[in-house]
Length: 455
Image 1 (cartoon, rainbow, N blue to C red):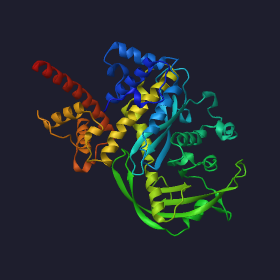
Image 2 (cartoon, rainbow, N blue to C red; image 1 turned 180 degrees about the vertical axis):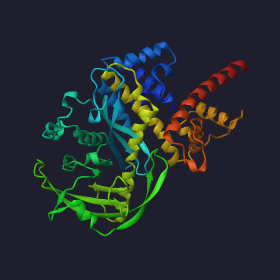
Image 3 (cartoon, one colour; image 1 turned 60 degrees about the vertical axis):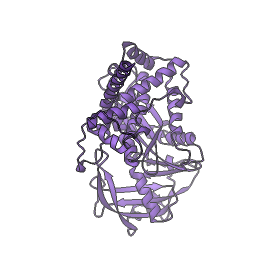
Image 4 (cartoon, rainbow, N blue to C red; image 1 turned 90 degrees about the vertical axis):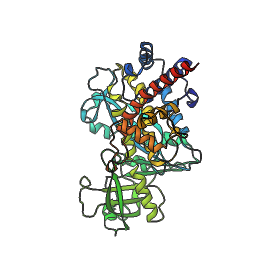
């Protein structure tokens, strides 16, 4: 991939130019050697020590690194884009084998680690644009099991505050001129989000699971389920690997509804008007045995075509899950051997940005297959890739397409490339990209040696 420079991080200020340079060199190293440990991917003992020291340095604040990365993410939105989708989701980062002070408990008290909440910018066509915002925290082990106490707290003191915090932060980063559609799964189905103070060009598309009272003393989803189907459509549901699609026929029902404020809620609004959408496989009674989505949105939907667009946008929520898969299985953030919780957090945010870059390569190749691979790869990278895959000593006059280059990278990572296999997935791309870096390095050395021999 193209070399990253300090100029791309306009808000990077770690208190010393040498720290800024080290931040960029660490990021570049992770991108070029995904999945390798800190000692494996650094060329010298000095670089290994400098990387560890960077993460351990108390004078390098996590907040300053995040500020630079979030600004970089906002700058990744094309200026001509007037609407962007923002999936939000959380993940456990587990460090069960590390004896590190400052880690918290994970879900259900199983294991130790750090909680990560990510917000990603995605185009309306489903292309990852940038890693926009992240939050990290640890759960106090003394609070484990005290559910009743948590319920009595206001939302700003609960873990669920991650949802409004993420929404508000992304709105601030992108400003009022662009429409932001915030997308989240059932965990975000809380009144505190729907009754937030409205912001300019900020919309919600949330999967619901709670039953709610609406005007007329009816329950929301009983009302929607009794409506006649507005349309029957076929959804392409991603499989467990995230790239093969399973065609699934579903019925669509929708209606504008007025949801009443619950008695215990302190919002100044008595009710809120939303559009409820039910997406359901005919005959199923359990959403764990088939598709049965219940979506709530603040978007104005004029007809069934607008509804189907909303449903398609919701399917892009899986991208955030794929991203968390990339940083764990591809970049190996759970294999880090740092011994301080704050050092781990600083490493995580940099690894996340590197992992997102690898993810972009995969999805960009599917969206714009015919563009030149030089939008992603350097000349030395695609030269080495072409020569290796075609077993030739001659190079073409123009670079291969991004789709072709990504297929070759996938083959390096173990993708068989049969028609039934579909395009290479994230895992094979990052494994192939790791091999490509070694090939490109050898190509550079041979080229340099040949040039020296000609002089």
